Image (cartoon, rainbow, N blue to C red; front, side):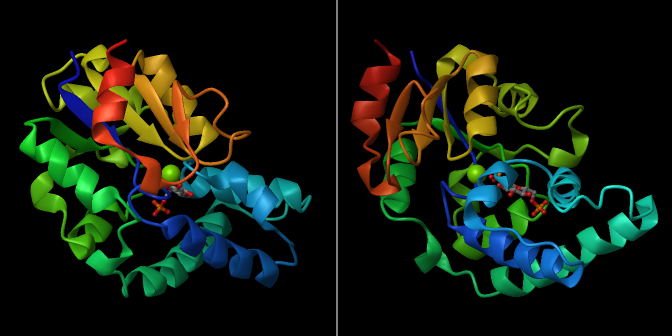
Length: 219
Ligand code: B16
Ligand code: MG
């Protein structure tokens, strides 16, 4: 029986994925690297430093920066990103998410956040949904990021549940792999192509219906 929901943040609860893209694009331009939306798909769900490494590789500049310089570049990106997320309000919840979270709460389901983002708590507060959640997995405490299942296993543990008693929501391929690896039922939000490995997939958050999801996960 499903007793808990474990959520990704960027691209599922709110569209900060677009802000990450804009901030990385402007950072990449400063160091002479061009990135586009297709390339950006790979950056979804992975940590800030791993994202920077992929961008440097993409521009054949992996050997051009010291660790300290890379830290500085990642900080610059995060400063720009933080300017974008300052403006977030509850109106930035993706369509259907408010309803889904409230219905889940009414049904007594536990809910945790499994986001790779260190900005997760600030964003959850701006969205005013923190009181619906039972906890946030701190990504700084993980041994391995997505696609490793660890963050999802920890999200279930926080609820005192086994992964197979939870449903995980993701918009990134790396995230779906993590949910599946945890032995949790995976719900994907995104293109059919990107969400191929999801147990159940929709193209937009608007289509997420709690009863349908619970029925599919219990089959
Ligand atoms: P930050 P999610 C992830 O969040 C993003 O998808 C990914 O693009 C980003 O690099 C990562 O968070 C780290 O974010 O720089 O704010 O710590 O999709 O796991 O909610
Ligand atoms: Mg995401």
